[in-house]
Length: 80
Length: 310
Image (cartoon, rainbow over all chains, first blue to last red; front, side, top):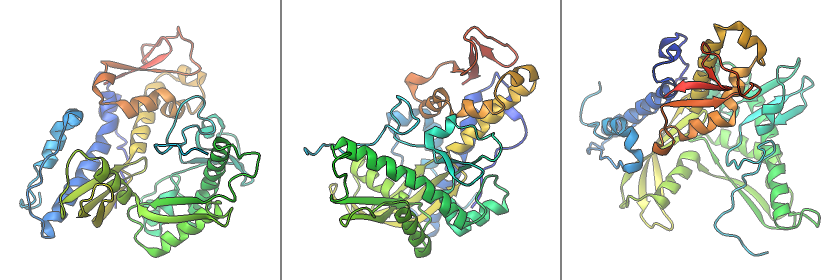
């Protein structure tokens, strides 16, 4: 179990010209994606090696890249 | 009384003004004496910077000992000192929820001043965090909800803990999904909340859409992966901007970045960001208490609104 504590460096957040609002969401999206991949790995390690299929629809289109990365995650592949 | 369908959701809460809100901030502010000063939306207008006042948030998950131990070990600020203290906060909060629910329903059915709901059948059903698999913590929570008043005011009143939050999300998924699930199908529910994001791998054990059944295979919780991270980063962003211009910061309340994070315009942005019709090249958050004609290029204020790039 880990707590996501935002980094103390100013990083991109201090750069007003670059994706200020998007950068607020990135840690949460990345944290959720990491948890999803952990669950897919659990499936692989517990006898459910079937390829995971995507059920993306039009409403999730803005997040398609991330979802596609997750949905095409191959449970048979060894851990990264 | 004529039954009203579909299910009615209470969306007018103390302090929410004329906004329709389905979710209430899990926040309490106490006086130095330990008496409750405000709860939920009302905390926004309660000055917790006054000497003696203390604000409490995110206490529910800390009724579970392992979660609290992990938070304390990692130095998470604002966590309760003990699970007992977390239970005390949760009881105080749920008591206020109970009183408002009771008042709302009694008023709606015309019994507020004529006997109330004590002689009616009232069932309260609670879900609990996905990782509360120990019977001990579930029993503790049952004590909390009864001490708050749920299920205690009439012989036909009851309160029960029936589902984990992931299971509740899974039921909604099965009943509303456009995807048809077959017997034995596996699916992953993701319940992204304010303080945690709970995930649960579920297996369909009955594909009857009216009465779906499933079993949980592997529940996990991402404590700390929640929308509160977005708020903290936004507070930091605004604080950094204002830090370079002390004269601006001095003219505003000391917790102005936090106030802006809790403002209705920012919460709307947070909820709708990513929806195609809501997106725009630059977001402008109105600054309460700032004159409409005030602009400051350094802080990024234009006509009383703080500007943010997408």
